[in-house]
Image (cartoon, rainbow, N blue to C red):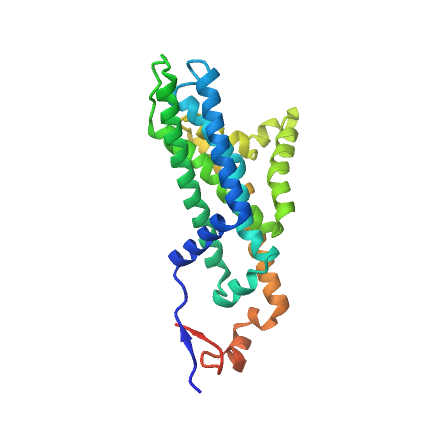
Length: 277
């Protein structure tokens, strides 16, 4: 009996699948609708009651991205945790055993969704600033520092959501941790002896210059990198260790290449098992 072969799905196809998961689910759909409505409401409030400084493009954009920065990372969390709550991990592992490719696809899907929402925020901010008619001389400040900084501010929050979901793998605890831990961290950082040290670790403080459209100094970039190591890279590392430990616990031979090659059911031509090409 000849071995069946299949071509593993490419990263672009995996990304589209993950993006569809984020859009098609009931929770993801309502979160996106909520973000859109809150963004419209925020822009409308600024245009209606804001002062001249607030009704500039920068002022409106700073307000417009806040709902997305707050709620969109929840979609990133659900992209990962839904695999375990809905048992989709069984299908994922069967079709794509390389867990790293799935995680990369989820990150790319989250970034793609974040870019779309960011463009929507920029368009609404332009319309809001045009309607507001501010007399501020910096009304139409479209500098690269402002656009790039606010985009980074939103997209890093999306990736942070994916990282928390990957590390915790349960929707409710991951969402609670995503919102509560930074608040607790900021409160502890207000203690005077710890204030300077936590200035390197508090993501809210280190990312604020991006939201303000400021040009970062070398020290500020170092602070950003340090805080991202704690809030993004560390959760991903925890998730990677957990996946490796779980795989070895269920299949001890997975950690031993020599034993993997000796097992007939792991061979490239094992009957009845598809072989990747």
